[in-house]
Length: 241
Image 1 (cartoon, helix red, strand yellow):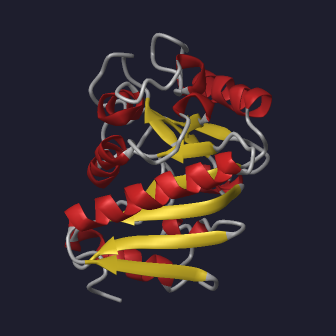
Image 2 (cartoon, rainbow, N blue to C red):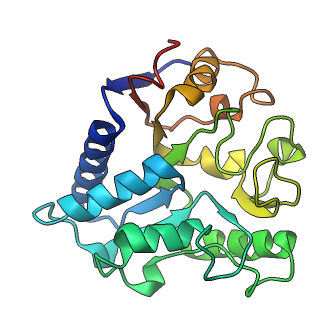
C-alpha cells in the first residue's frame, strides 16, 4: 500500500485516546471550514473504547454535535433493541451523551424496519444517496482476525458487488449470520480512512493488508482514503510488521 500512514501505540487504552483526539480535531476543522462532516462509524471493542473517549474528551473540542452526520459501515440485522447492534453501542458510548440529534444518526435497518437483509440494504442505500454527500469525510474501520472489514468477509460474493452502496449478508461466518454492509464502492468514497486495530490476534491480518494482499483473501487491503489512510495499531496488532 502506498500513501498510508501507520501509527503504533503501546496499549489499547492509549490507542483509543489518540484516535478519539484525531477524530475530534478533524470534525472541528471541517466545521471551522463551514462544512457539515459526514462520519462513518464501526463496531467492535476498540471502536467502543474510542467512542467513550470521544465522549470524555468532547468538552472543549469546539465540535457542534448538532452539525455532524453519523453513518454506519455495517450492522447486525437483529431486533432494534439488541445489544449486538452497532448503532445501540454507539448511542450508549457517546451519541446519546453528546445529545446528537436523532436526524443526524443514520442507523441501518433492524428486523423491525425491513423484511430481510436485502431490502434493508436497499433502504439504507437509498438513504445514503438522498441524505449523504457522495463521500465520507472520516470513515473508521475495524479489522477482524480474518481480515474482514465492515461485514465484507474473505471469499464472500459481496466483495465483488459493484454499482451498489450496501448489500445484504445472509451467511456471515461471524455471528449473527444476517447483516447489512456498505460495499467496497461506498467505503472507498472516503476522504480519510482510520483503521482501528488492537490485539495480537489481528496482527496477521494487519500484515497481510499492509502487504497488499488480494482483497478476496484480506478484505482490509481493499479500502484506502482518497486523501489519507491511517492505520492506528497497538503494539500487539503491529507485532508482525
